[in-house]
Length: 185
Image 1 (cartoon, helix red, strand yellow):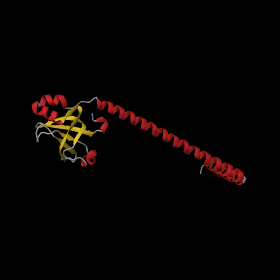
Image 2 (tube, rainbow, N blue to C red):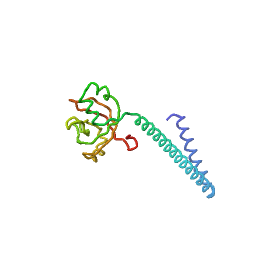
Image 3 (cartoon, helix red, strand yellow):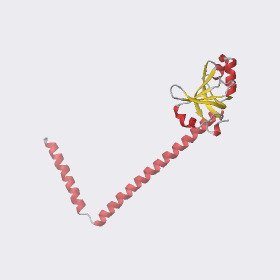
Image 4 (cartoon, one colour):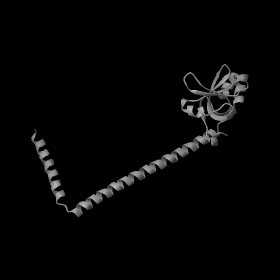
């Protein structure tokens, strides 16, 4: 062992022994005072941590509220179409309908005629169109399985979707999301 390592270890052991001697010579009152001080410091650290967490939580709630309000305002400016209007536009002129809807976000309202899942397991809802075969299909992510499982044929819904073109004149609406009641108009 190198001499400096040996002397460092001897010094550390000596300091530890000295600490034990000093601790043993303290009176019970001094020990109680030191313990009370440690407890008070620990309580203050815990209170500071709790206050910081509460401030963080409040900040996160304020940020979420601001984001929700911003989203609500952006949704309020989006156009709203009926499912029948979209279906009629695609039946009349697919090119013009694509220019109006494809790649654009909008709200759509209509009566549910079918509830199903696609080949990938993602749910979709069919709304009443101008005829029983060409109703717009509203495609949702699997995150909406629970919500869609409570839907019923005949219900009228309003959702936010993005136009996805058509398949043989059937309008395909993708990335659909249910809207809270205060955002449906």
